[in-house]
Length: 244
Image 1 (cartoon, rainbow, N blue to C red):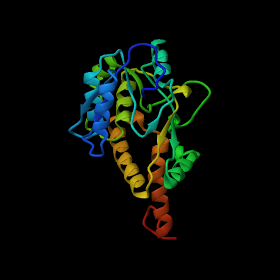
Image 2 (image 1 turned 180 degrees about the horizontal axis):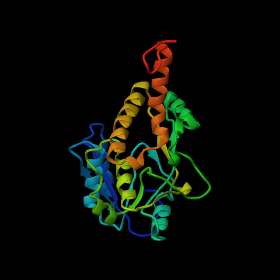
Image 3 (image 1 turned 120 degrees about the vertical axis):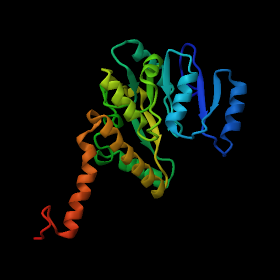
Image 4 (image 1 turned 30 degrees about the vertical axis):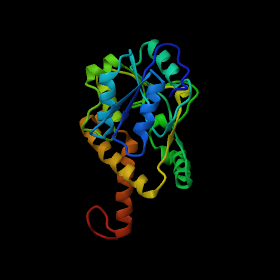
């Protein structure tokens, strides 16, 4: 984040979820050496709560979300802010590209590069030019708009960006994806962590779709449909309950 090639004033707000691995001491030391850095505590230890703490403390015209466990290009912020200033968009994001950092994580990243792994998520692909998406991965938004929408909904500890996107689009907003903002998203490095991630995402994806039906894509229906077909094939019973 500190290597961003951004011309103009910038502040870095780090929201620590009461970590016990030395992160807070490291951040405090950085803040002492860099006046652009401010550190806040997130007692709830949940993502939307952290984002709203940052939003309440933000002083700039634009707010950029930059998650941990992600590698951002140096021009990430500059590209996003420049596009926002051109107008006609309300959220500028970049492609989320899977990035493996361990043996299992690398296999997950490889799987997620396939069409099946990507599914219908357009923001997980890189194209030659900007394109409109139904939701964005992190990205840059106008602070005033976020405040008008009430920030991130704290009832969505998972898929909070999807839920926010539903509100942005319902208000007539436009979300785009810029190739030059592509970031490397570190994939889970164990089967248990991966299973937990996708179970939680699936649960809150359903919750988002119920609140914002327009956010539902056909690809979201593929996994449950596939499971149903596999169960029917395994039992040999059709929808009527009869076999054969």
